[in-house]
Amino acid sequence: MRYVSTRGDAAPVRLSDAIAAGIAPDGGLYVPDAMPSVSPPPRGGTLADTASWMLRPFFAGDPLEAALPAICADAFASPAPRRALPIDGAHVLELFHGPTAAFKDFGARFLAACLSRRRREGDRPLTILVATSGDTGAAVGAAFHNLPGVRVVILYPDNRVSPRQAHQLGSFGGNVRALRVEGSFDDCQRLVKAALGDPALQADVPMSSANSISLGRLLPQMAYFGHAAIHADEPMNTIVPTGNLGNAVAALWARQIGLPLGEVVFACNANDTLPAFFGGQPYRPRDAVPTIANAMDVGAPSNFERLVHLFGGEDAARVHGHAEGVDDAQIRDVIRRHAANDGEVFCPHTATAMRVFERLRLAGDRRAWTLAATAHPAKFESVVEPLIGRLVAVPEALNAMLAREAHAEPLAADGRLFADWLRQWAHG
Image 1 (cartoon, rainbow, N blue to C red):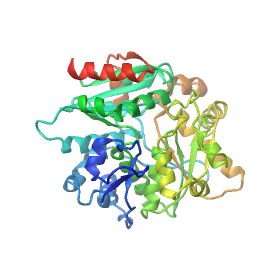
Image 2: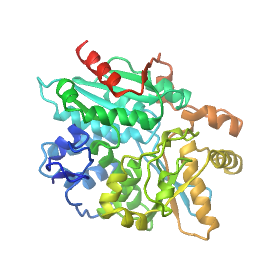
Image 3: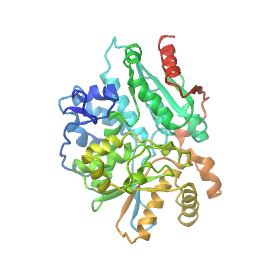
Image 4: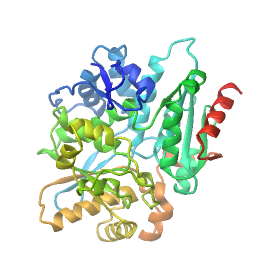
């Protein structure tokens, strides 16, 4: 299996090289040169077993191929249960049982397992850059913390993440540093892309990415959708909360290779780049606006390039996709109402999926739907607890992280200043 750029101007590479690079030399994102076909794995295996089965063709011929079962065992040590909700036809896929209580733990641990096995003695230290709107940075920090030969730089928009998210991001120390950027998530993402695309900086400070632009993050996210789908009684229709489109594209890729997924609907917050596009408007990145579902505050979703590549153009992507926006008032209403009526407590992001499900029901759609629950509500206590009128129990791993001291350095949204900072840390 070889990997090519979505922009078509970079030479094909092996998977491990694509993972190490993060982004293609022409600025595009790596995708398989041809999507494989995979028969559904047998029921009864673990999530790690399903992941290994699904990802085997993507690793074919790569130096990491023999290590794939061990990589999956490392990455998929946490469960991802699918359970029925007390609402007719609704299920929830709980993706928040990892170390940082968010779905990003799976991809981050997979990427760390790949890069640690790829590293050779004598290699120069690799700096992992990650822009985060809330959850990605903590997952990456936890996965790479104290890993030899790797440094991690987390960039997050100052005052645009929840207090507990901010504490997580700055709680690692050692080989993990957090920068609070004066700007939006899109500013953080631009800094990361500019650094990765700077040949002189790359020569001085070898870098890769841990955002969903990295194949090492996106490929494993296919696994939990596939694992849930093979245990469903019919093709699993799925509603995926999304901002940067990584998790949503992973679900589409899982369906594309042959797993029994049905329709995939994207649930967005008030950032309406995707709903506008799927509603028929030309694709136009926008400045991100802050919402209470902050991990989805993205106005220029990077994985849009992979979406268009999958379907062969923007018009085809629009025909095959469906995205809906949910504003803060509706998110609050969903959290308050379901906590009171059926005892279900959702994080703000999962609440967007529930609101889209409710719209489908009101429109007469009686099919079964599975909602991807992307984070534990305890990460958003300042939003959730006032709405439900009680405390949310904090998972043990998250509690331990919150007990540590936290520190983040301020940074202006300036590429030159960021490059100087990277060189200073690398050589200081």
